[in-house]
Length: 114
Image 1 (cartoon, helix red, strand yellow):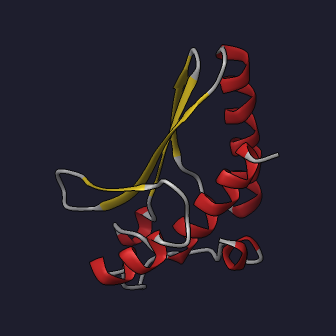
Image 2 (tube, one colour):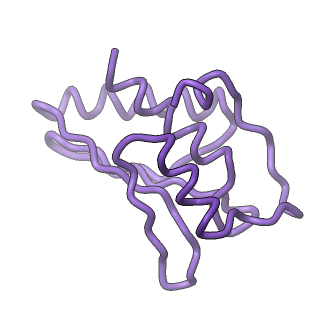
């Protein structure tokens, strides 16, 4: 994971081929506990649920992820409530996963290890 932490997300306007399933599995080994999800449009996402002691901790985490995401210029889908947050990441411009998604996942994980 440390190699991903040293990188920053690169703006993607499309025109890049999304990772195929073998590349996705190669990168999945570099992040901890992220599931690979394929939606009804067959677009791959990274998804992870984080557990916290209460609502305030969930909200604090979500706010930190928001600041990080804005800094990286890469924005996940986030849902949260009492004691949990769920993060889903994909590169919308290419309708699939790219290195950016794994970089953001690694940096989000780092927020839970502080």
